[in-house]
Amino acid sequence: MLTMKWAIAPALLLLAACNTTGDNTSRLIKVPVPERPAGQEDMIGFAAEPLDSVRVGIIGLGMRGPGAVERMLNIEGVAIKALCDIEPERCDSAQAMILRAGAPAADIYTGNDSVWRQLVERPDLDLIYIATDWKKHALMGKAGMEAGKHVAIEVPAAMTLDEIWDLINTSEQTRRHCMMLENCVYDFFELNTLNMAQNGVFGDLVHVEGSYIHNLSEFWDAYYDNWRLDYNHENRGDVYATHGMGPACQLLDMHRGDRMVTLVAMDSDPFTGPGIVERQTGTRPDDFKNGDHTMTMIRTDKGKTIHIQHDVMNPRPYSRMYQLTGTKGFANKYGREGYALEPDSSTINAVPDLYNLSAHDWLSDEQQAALVERYRHPFIDEVGEIARKVGGHGGMDYIMDYRLIYCLRNGLPLDMDVYDLAEWCSLAPLTQLSIDNGSAPVAVPDFTRGGWNKLDGYRQAHL
Ligand SMILES: NC(=O)c1ccc[n+]([C@@H]2O[C@H](COP(=O)([O-])OP(=O)(O)OC[C@H]3O[C@@H](n4cnc5c(N)ncnc54)[C@H](O)[C@@H]3O)[C@@H](O)[C@H]2O)c1
Image (cartoon, rainbow, N blue to C red):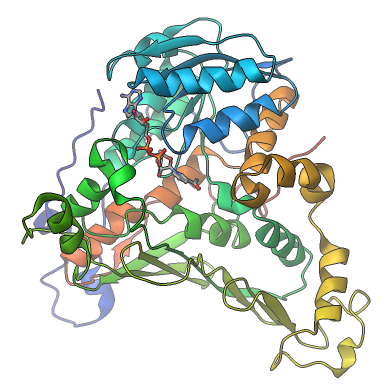
């Protein structure tokens, strides 16, 4: 069971709410940060013992899980030993994929919602890969680590602060990796742009944007037991922020020299959500909580800003926004995928005709191609081709799983640690808190409990 219970009592959390100075800090909401238990250390830069081959158990084989089976079958050094889903036919069709690939059959765990515990307890697994719905992510992850396994959990890996701290504490206690499967940090544009940013192409980064704008109308009826609409029905705030947060936070070196300090959130009314429930049930609810459009603004210790949005209800083209502003340049992925640079950007030798540029306008196709060629991320050279072939959102899902296995096999720190999980997932509870209190500023806890400045910048480990 997840233990720490923090029913949020806004009256208790509103620090100095009766301060009448009228400035914003007087309304700052702070949530408690549990003290790190004695003898427990942080997981910053943690690397586990290298593994010859990674023996995997996969839980959750709905719309998302089978893609992981397919990808793992195409990564060297992986053995899928166990599969689990409540629904037997979902296990059967994943098993058929394994057999078609000529790999040994996996053991199947199915038929009820707690049989996953038997999979987790098997002694012959190194990694538990969790692709169920949001409700049991943290519970399963915690059980996996307590059973001595590394865990990788689909997004969002945790929905409440209790769950987040439970995963952090369990990872720190057990010295097992706890990674969230945030695939969007491996999209090719994001990887190349991260590489450019790390090489100074945009100067100092100032502001980053990200979002999950995805009209889910064709999916609402397909989720197991209606979990996703129910969750939106019952919860306000940005409940699915990690696709925007991941790339933004890597660009800004979160807990590798900078940290989120304050956020403010605001939502629209739920205009479309209640109609989806009405279509399903015949009755329009008057208690649908999740606003159609949620916006969050975050300020960091180093004075940078992040803007995150969420809308899964309304008819808009898909967008994760992904936009960055630096002192020497700009990048943008959706609408127009491109870059704008000042002539004195550090790309001078990489881009033709740079002297004639100004960041008032986009790079030409030729200049952009030269820039991307110069700063193509090494992962794309390494596995871009097979990633595109095996697929998963154009290849980014494959690179995510490949990197997870690569780092485990080579005993390297993973690309995303438990504090990334915590920071990116914390938007769900913290934005709810802000919105429930009239968009009051909320202090973002330091989930590293003092370790956020130990590393100098975000880097992926490689031999
Ligand atoms: N990263 C991405 O791009 C991406 C894309 C889609 C979904 N997701 C995430 O993947 C997860 C799954 O989403 P989905 O679309 O596949 O949902 P889904 O409803 O299609 O599948 C969930 C599966 O989990 C199984 N399940 C639920 N509880 C279980 C239990 N106790 N034991 C065993 N099996 C159980 C269900 O039977 C179902 O097959 C979610 O966290 C979602 O947010 C991520």
